[in-house]
Amino acid sequence: LAAPGIVKALPAPYFTVRGTNAEARFDSFGDTGHLTPVDRFFVRNHTTTPVLDAADWRLTLWGDGLHGRSPVHFTYGQLRDLPSVTRTALIECAGNGRSLYTSQQGEPVTGTSWTLGAVGAARWRGVRLADVLRRAGIARDAVDLQPRGLDDPYVSGGIDYGRVRRPLPVAKAFDDVILAYEMNGEPLPYDHGYPVRLVVPSWVGIASVKWLGDIEVSTRPLTSPWSTDWYRLFGDAHPAGGSAPISRQTLKSAYQLPFGATLEAGRVHRLTGRAWSAHAPVRTVEVSTDGGAHWRRAHLHDTPRRDGWVRWSAPWLPRATGPVTLLSRTTDAAGNTQPDRAVHNTQGYLFNAIVRHPVTVA
Ligand code: MTE
Ligand code: MO
Image (cartoon, rainbow, N blue to C red; front, side, top):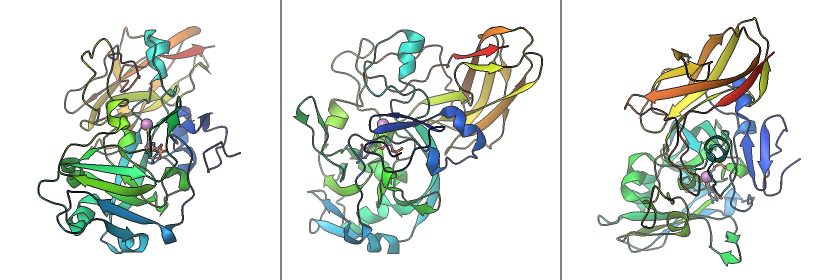
C-alpha cells in the first residue's frame, strides 16, 4: 500500500497520492479533533523518505558563524537530554491550494497540484533550536543558518540541486523554531522526518526541514535553489526577478466536504470546516450558501490563538434543488481577510482566495 517514496501506508479514504507526495482529503478532517492524526497528515517529499537509525544519527553544526571550534556534533541521546518544549504548530506547504489558481482563476501554475489538504496541525516535542545554537557557540554576528536534510539529492531536468536545504534567519531561529523528535506524543514517523526535523511555526512548509543532518551557521546571508529558484513569487505581479524568498504562510478557510458532494434538500445540514492564519489568531469565519450574495457568521468551536486552526460550523437548510457554490471567508485579528482572487504567481504559492466549493442539492 505504501506509495513510492513514502513509508507509511496511506489508506485510500484519506489521501490522494501524487508521485512522492500525498495530500490529505480535507473532508477526512471532519472526524478528527484539533490535531491531525499521523494517518492523515500530508507528506511532501522532494525525493523519497530515508529510513534512518537514531543510534548512529548525529546533528552537525558548522561554519564561520560559530565562534569556537567547528564542526560541533550532537547525538540523538544528547538532544533528548536537553530541556524539551512541546507546542502545537501547523505545517502547510507553500503550494497548498495551488490547483485553485487554475480551476478557479484560470491561471497556469507549475508544481504539485494540491487542492487544500497539504496542511496539518500537530503537537511537536523537541528542543529549542536557540538552545542548541547557544551550546554550539553561535557568534554574535551570525545572520543566517542553512539546515539540510539527509534525504537523497534532488535531481530534476538533469540538474542535481543537492540535498534539500534552505536559509533560515538567525532571528527566526531564536524566536520559536524547534528541533522536533516527537509528533502527537509518538516518535517522529519516518515520513515526517525521523529522527529529528525542524518545525518553523507559521512559515511555509519548506522551512521545516525533515531528516535534519547538518546546519551551516554563517556570518553572511546564505542562498540555495530553495530560496532563489523556488519559493519566491514570480510572474507579472512580481517583476524584476521575483519577490524575496517567501517565509510566512497566509490565511485560508475550507469546508470539510468533498467537492461536488450531494446534499439532501429540505433538511438542516451542519456544514463544518476549518480556518487558519499564519499572521494572527482567526477572528471570524463567514459562510455564504448562495454564491456570495449573502454572508453570515459561522460558529467557532476552538478558542482562536496563534497556533493551529479553528474548527467552525454553520447550519444550512437548502430548499431548492440544483447546483450551489458554498463559500467561506475568514478574517484574522490583524485584519487580514481572504480576497476574491489570489495574486497570481507562476509557481502557485500562497493561495489565499475564498474557495468556491461546488455542491449539489438533490
Ligand atoms: N525536508 C527534506 N529534507 N526534504 C523534503 O523534501 N519537504 C519540505 C519540508 N521539509 C522536504 C523537507 C516541504 S516542501 C514541506 S511542505 C514539508 O517538509 C512537509 O512536511 P510533512 O511531509 O511532514 O508534511
Ligand atoms: Mo512544501
